[in-house]
Image (cartoon, rainbow, N blue to C red; front, side):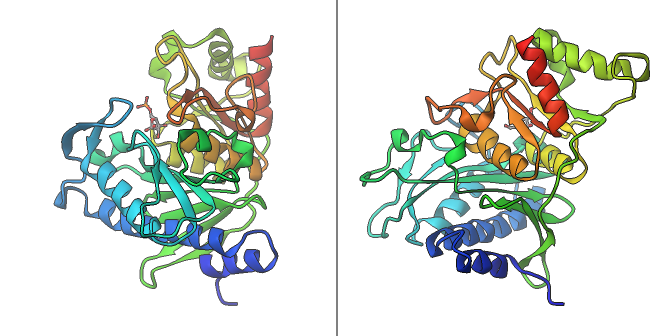
Length: 330
Ligand code: F6P
């Protein structure tokens, strides 16, 4: 049987009425941009992808060449297609309404063009995250306000993982599906259908160097995992931390696990960005049967107050996420 390409997958969904032609084009365009970014990632030091440009993004993080290049690739790929009203990015302070003379469409795109950028210099997997919302009715010049919609309003979300292979994980609200880039043909080919995250796990991912700043419920959960067989959990746990959310979440999608970047005494709101990191990942994880909260509340129900807002993230295997959320309520 012929493999299902991303194009075929999307056309089937369009025929079933799950997505319209504009959304199909938008997802395909993001996928095409991810292919272009993956080529730049592979060039690495040959083109100085990790070089500091001497500029900071809106969250005062030093921008590397690959951060800026990835942002440009995604914007240039998307601005003329006619599906979008505006784009918002981790690398841009304010949303960019689609400039004339390009036609404007009905969707809003949020991007983290290069996730895990501290890993660029060390040849470890990085990625791109995107989230799609509808532009509110009657809005012709989409500003920050137009984007401030809770995550359950997303109509699509995805991420690319630039690892030993380039992968694309997407959801349009009917499950989470995985594609691998065939670099010889240049197409994304479906390799995972309707991914299911196991409900239980014995693997956790957290940056343990923040331990002294954690709130009590997170400390309790991790202490219990670390106590292993000798503690209340009665079994040993394993720990993994890549420090690229895309890679850590892909591992959770592949074999289960819990991923946490909770708020703490230093990052009092949390570390990860709600609208273009936490929300798309929460949508993807929930569509794979997992759960995603900020420790207290379902992430997809959080009403954003600001485009670049940060939030605590606890996501992955359902029973473990529910346990952490219970500990917060206790
Ligand atoms: O926001 C970006 C990010 O690079 C995530 O991809 C990752 O999970 C996290 O930051 C890593 O944080 P730390 O450097 O504290 O391990």
